[in-house]
Amino acid sequence: SNFASQCVELPKLKDWATNNIFLGINAKLGGQAELCDDLAEPGTVFVSYDVSRQRSIGLSVDAMLLGNDGRMISGQADSCYQKGEILDADFLEKSLQRCVRIYEQQYGTPVRRVVVYRDGRFLENEQKICLETLAGYVVDLVELTKSGPDCHRFINFDTKTKESSQPRPGFFVTLRERMANLVTSSAAKIPGGLARPLVVSHVHGDATFDQIITEVYKTTAIRTYCDRPTRLPAHSHYADRRAGAELVARGETYPSIPGLHAA
Image (cartoon, rainbow, N blue to C red; front, top):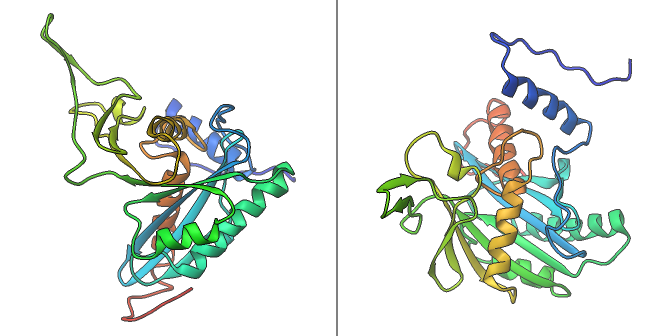
């Protein structure tokens, strides 16, 4: 048979588990659970980078969203073994060029704007490489952090009824210029405690901060292979999970060797 198949043993039949299994099979066949028609103007590409480490080995991964509809793409060439937390310069440059090329091949129209998300902070020359590689395009650079002194927790408190509740998805508090805490759909639906927002920092570009916040929120609402939204933007979440999973899977292949650089 030419049909894709997958064998799964479930101790108990649960709707959320079976839903995610079928959505995962759909993703393996090239499908996507949800798109977003108004994510951004045509000609916009969103690229996200994440670096994970296990022992002395690091793996950088990129994933892209096509701005026309939020379709996510990440293939075998979109990862690179490296040493340390800084994105490999050659990988960063070539992956940015590849993302632009893929968009133009998919849609047959030129790329006008590239939005680069970095899980964590841009380190050393990463910003410079992005700007030099994308010199012919409008570029916005955005940092996304999940913890630290700027990541505050919020709750709604009604002074009249004296009742408290979780803040609504999309709620954000500006901390300083071009930096805010954003409550995403996933962050607002935790079973207990306070919502855990994202820290969104717009470190370069001419887009308004309202536009940046709106785009980040919309990308967190896109579901690619599960039935729930993610705390991070869809492509950032995928890059994060893929980086960790690949390192775990290859932990025995690449043992802890000081100074190892596998590219």
